[in-house]
Length: 234
Ligand code: ADE
Image (cartoon, rainbow, N blue to C red):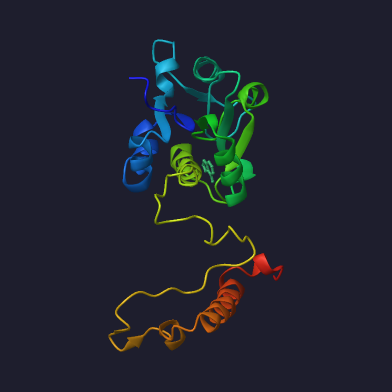
């Protein structure tokens, strides 16, 4: 032992559904990054920190209102046990700052230890946010049944940016959102004709300047169609 360098990043996910969080992180690229020792990922069941006889993690809202909230005691106990001085504690919630590629890049470059806490039901008791959470993240303007799905999304986006995670043949450099202003041009592979549908001729021409000009024009067109907001258009 003692020959392997430490992982660039350690990610702990605290959730009522560890298997939901881990399933998407146990295949393909992220699984390989874990096996290669680039990242260490663990999921923890919040219920393990519930101490009352029914091991309850949720309770009704003070002041009334629909639904349930995660109680402070198990969350405080779990977070205090799992965090260190250097940990960034992230809470997944639709009330958070919207997670973008730039946030993924920042967290990936910073490395170190992330503790990702997953909300459930209507969320978590606000004392947890005030005392223990460094960053609240939402993956978009819609409501999921639980934050474990969102934690897997955020973890995937961060880990694939770690050096070595994509292997030598793939680079995250020139994909959509590296250049945040434009989507990518349409892309094609072989065969050049399929069911009478043909690959645009310019892509088979070998003329690199023309290909680049075509890609720019197509990227602009796709962005205008799918994401006019990126162009400052309504
Ligand atoms: N939990 C429920 N919905 C969510 C969202 N959109 N982002 C992050 N966590 C969530």
